[in-house]
Length: 322
Image (tube, rainbow, N blue to C red):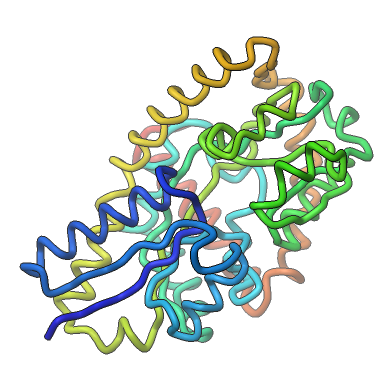
């Protein structure tokens, strides 16, 4: 039987989630000889970032491509991915690929997603988060009192409070004007978003803390998914799992390209990656937040965190990362 479905992306046309959602749509149409037709809706066409997860939960749309922060109001356990300094600084897509295919972590959040009418299909790497600001950030003391825009997540708020910042959750579409008008001093996003949303135009510095890879979670409405033939379910999962490494290569190349474009458009913009001493200082503060996940992360949070840490260690060994 023909299947018509909607997929809401939290990113604009041309950015990672929307591009890979369209690749998914094209793949499923080709695989099914045209019987599966998935229409992709970029950011803003069906509501704000917080709204689209609810639409998927209710079945108004069948799929949503969101991240660990915005999904947290439904699945607080997903915020474990927002803890800073858990992942290695290299080969993150390979680590995720090993975890999703061989690890013990994924079934735990899937159980929590399903309890909220949703099913996660994979975890996708979108590059490292950068902090852009109007003053240099070289150590935690430079963040003292800084009004930093974050995605809506209690755990992210705790992360940046630990650094001394004043976290300010704000809708994606309001960030540019918030920076322009001085409602916020800084914001956190991967490079492609800083370029495509033009945040760099109203900022002077961009700092890489090496603290947090930005991770997306392609998700499907549970009732819709469970009603599909098994071979269709498997093909949908396989697409997203098999895409982890090639999508990671794609986004690394895209981020390099966007970095060059921003440097050309605004030569005075300063890009800095922190040295090892500064990173160690930030990491020490980040680790004070780990115990808080047990309260913020909902039922079974301690097991979720322990399992993730073990999976990361095993994955690092498997892919040859220190």
